[in-house]
Amino acid sequence: MTILVVVFCVLVLVLLITWGKINPFLAFLVVSILAGVLLGIPIGEVSKSLEVGIGGMLGSLAVIICLGAMFGKIIAESGAAKKITLVLMDAFGEKYIQWALMITGFIVGIPLFYNVGFVLLVPLIFSIVYQFKLPAVYIGIPMLAALSVTHGFLPPHPSPTALVAQFDANLSTTLIYGLFVAIPCMVVAGPLFAKTLKRIEAHPLETFRPKEISNEDLPSGFNCFATALLPVFLLAASSLLPYLSVTSKTLISLFVFLADPVTVMLISLMIATYSLGIRRKIKMKAIMVDYADSVKDVAMILLIVAGAGALKQVFIDSGVSSDIADLLGGWEVNPLILGFIMATIIRVSLGSATVAGLTTAGIIAPLIETTGVDANLMVLAIGAGSLMFSHVNDSGFWMYKEYFNLSLKDTFKSWTVMETIVGVVGIIMVLILDVFV
Image: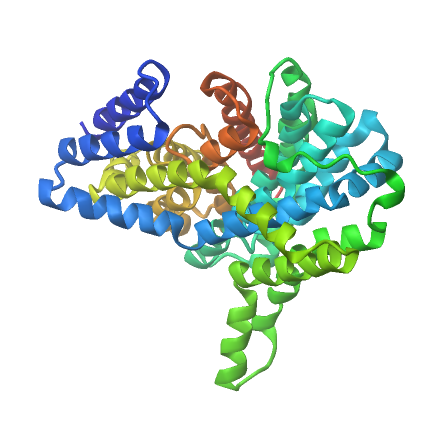
């Protein structure tokens, strides 16, 4: 019954947005209330679920998106994005620029949380789109596919790291297996799949359109790459901080603070403001005006992401994830496939890859000892399922749709299919590994 309610609510959401032309944020709120009532949450508690979901989703994400928009704005306005684009195009040529972006997304995505990597790299995609008149979706999907596989398969991302701990797997082994799985996934879902998307029209946000600056007036290549990649270097360095032999509580607290993505983005923005702005004789007032404009452009994205958080919280509070997992717990199939299917259904129902992975892990964990399945492969099988069928209850779906300014139909045709390809190729690679390890 609960599965039918979830399906019904998702259909209502789609109809409100597509047929009813309702703003997605308002549609999310209406459907969240409807879902709460139908799933048995006391009417007086539904509003609390909405508040928790919105607050939990926006939390640090709101700060990261806003700082990322500002960071992207100065990268675009200063000419840094154009310079980086010229260097990449000179190195790879227009024919292979997708592969260059995919590799960049993969390297950047390993230390970065998905949302941080998304807002950091989108300006680079749009710069190439505007400068070389290439289709935005065709250029963007390979990089976003690379970011997605790192999020689902590779530690230190939250879900795979947590699953390693729950299954008592080996972090290094999981990372090695994860690389073996991730590379084919991003190649198939990236450059190969993107060849079918050339005809999709997209009109990316104007805030990321770079200024027309002559090549002679562009910042130096070193300044551009060093500044644009600074958040990556800082986050990569911060990931090593917990392994330092430090006993001082003050230093430990300092390390935790410096490792936080919000702190990293703020430090990066401050340095970019100087290196790409003040140092190049751009007035602070002009820089701040650009920053304010960038936040205006992502305001609706924040509201839509918040709405997705409200619906997700209603599903969690109602116990839908536990009901679905219990329903599937008795299936007699390969444990790796069972983990994949469980994670897929919970992902489709709730929208969150992390929640889908962790919920599935609680049911699958006992099967690891009884069946003898490789715990490291189970982490990856669940990771593959948690990336499947991203749709209207996933914040990533809406970030992509709104940043690229696409119709709902084209978002399904590109983003949802790309994520599903990652999941399908991922489980195939896991099953192949299972034969040899």
